[in-house]
Length: 397
Image (cartoon, rainbow, N blue to C red; front, top):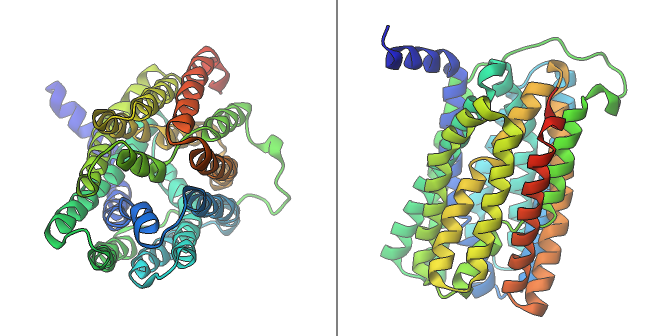
């Protein structure tokens, strides 16, 4: 049998119907989301006159909401013995809430919509990841979660390109922004249809009804949580990247295109990162991802338009591996009856760290300018990359 045929057969066996359908659902959900996200920080700053500190607080609170609800959703999913119901609920709420940005008149209204969307994500993420894990052989978990991240990135690329085209056609007015927000409902409805009719639940025997003990999860899991949480304390998220691009001199109409470059590199590298992690070790690839973020933040800190383009491109590589590698490590190490709980613990810790990072990042920006927080992020990420590579054997189960 030719090598190419053998690889294709392995791939088809790994990517079963559930994995493909969940990937397609994520594609259209991210299509909808990324029609809004590249514009939201600009909308807040330009039309609703929000400060960087307010934008950071909105994003940080939204991410904390995700984290707390993921923990509850994951714990409940493990006790329920089923995954699909919570996954459908979370995706449906998210895809129906986001287009309400069309009606937003204040930063507070945007905050409510953003937090509602993230709470919906909190409901779906842990059971969805556990559903993917239940359909994935351990030896190919990096590849499968890489595939799912690639579908995320491809949908995000399509959404950001659609936003660029619409913004270019409609102009840069407030009414154009609101029209794009409303149109995001269309791919969201497609995503919900795929999830409801094409994804099959994978029932399992629930864990015994007893209080969760931290010792029930292995030490490699906790090393992952420590590193990812410390890294998240210094990382800058997409909203500050978008605002920094404008600060660097990138024209408003070009920012969705730069964001599309980020999504392109994310989609392009997600599967290669996953495959290499299955071969070389997931902690090793995660340390490379940390290093990439440090270099991307350094490019953004340069203050140039070229630095902004390079920053988005490198940030896409980082995003292609950061959470997918973490989810693959959890898939490999957590007991099957506690996988959703493990994902919940992980996201809660990272979410709290992200809230602190975004609030402090916005405060530093307002007081010391845009370069300072990006320089802190760059240096810290490079240092964490070295530490993680040196301690990569701690992640072996």
